[in-house]
Length: 324
Image (cartoon, rainbow, N blue to C red; front, side, top):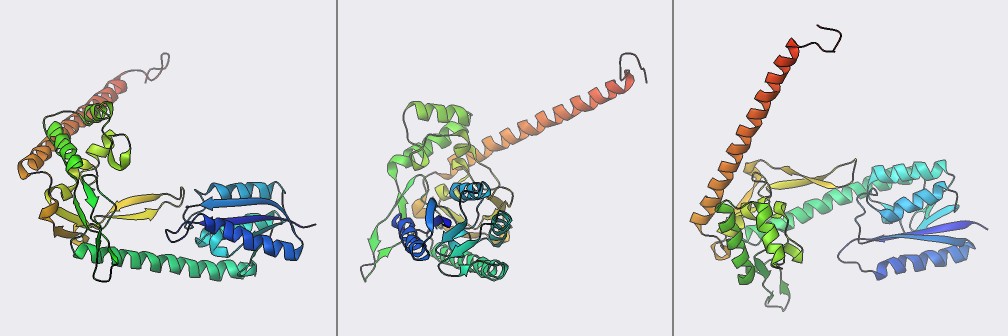
């Protein structure tokens, strides 16, 4: 009897855990019609279809296929396996080498033609989806509404429009968290190191962003990229969007950020969201300048030390017995 392995995945916010079982159910029905024996099920829940590298279910499926544990892989559709053309092609090649075909309810047995055409269609779908998402977020930013997730120091305003539909994107100051924001700014400006600040906050049991413990990078971040609590210009009532873009590292499947040209930034004044006054903001900027200058001086000292050592080394024998 033909042994079959089932694979299912979901990731969209519009889907739910039951989507996995729905996919398995219709695959089981197909296996029953074909009189195939189901010997394994593999799933990845809440994980993007854009890359297989970070998906444990698909990795385990490939490992078991190479070990000869089943004869066929059955899924609802090819895009349930992956929307990345290169990933689909790679998986197809590995399974084909192991003599394991991929069969889907939507496309039937997958061939090189499916991989090429469907992969191209999925790549175009992802590109179009990204463009539409980007355009939608920009529309909110143009209305002076934050374009990202909920920032520490703020809370969501739940309002309804004239039709009773929820209005998304409105924020207001969370006074309890705003107190912590100002405290962090004052401590940083006073010369207290981010690690000391975070240790104190954690010892006091103050929840960090997202309810997680505080970390020093959460506070100091990256000045040019505008990351980190002390670099967030929303705290001075200045909303900046599109400062960064994100691309996938093909070697890891993880997204990495790249700084966009300043001409592409979208900047809006939102004075009602200001938490930190101008004097305190500038005090932090001065403190960052002092830190940057210190590190420049230290780096120059290290370079001089290395140059000096290279000169000294040129006057000494390279080995104990072979003078140069």
